[in-house]
Amino acid sequence: MLAPEKLTLVAITDGVRGDAAGLIARAQAAARGGATMIQLRLKDADARTMVEVARALVASLPPGVPLIVNDRADVAIAAGAAGVHVGPEDIPPAALRRVVPRAVIIGASVGTDAEAALAADADYVGIGPIYATDSKPHAGASIGTSRLTDLIALTKKPAVAIGGIDATNAAHAIAAGAAGVAVIRAIFGASDPEQAARSLRAAIGR
Image (cartoon, rainbow, N blue to C red):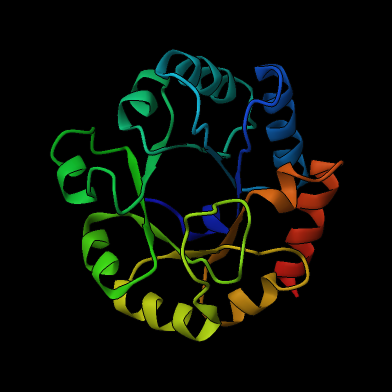
């Protein structure tokens, strides 16, 4: 079972941006700074590249920092990752449960009541976008922290808030009932991902 503290600070990777070594180094820095989970998100990479990067991350992340692969359960299993995170357009958690090993963590994105129902078989949910974000241009309109609270109650799952989260507003998401926050740009877009992760952990603690 996924411990809620693993969701405190989920660092979602940006693209490879030149070479895989740079992405791996940024992920390692995020973990040193306090990220409690890394989610590999490589929207434009082929399956082989995703498996290679995922395997490298599994081998190099500190013990206790699980790797979750975005969208691709097959890649997650092939790489020995801890789990997979799926969106509303992906294979739903209920279907995944029938084919993946029991130990595989399943996360699901939620932004509406209908999506909350689809996430019933997930281990955790990512709820958002809470605030406006440029990292996921098709994520939809921001829902705010009041709606975050509603969807947490509806899903009855440990939840991370996502979408426009940074050190200035992370504490608001926690106050609204989230177990943690998930960020892309606030860590992977920073010049110093380790310090950025530290700042977010401090903000969450407040």
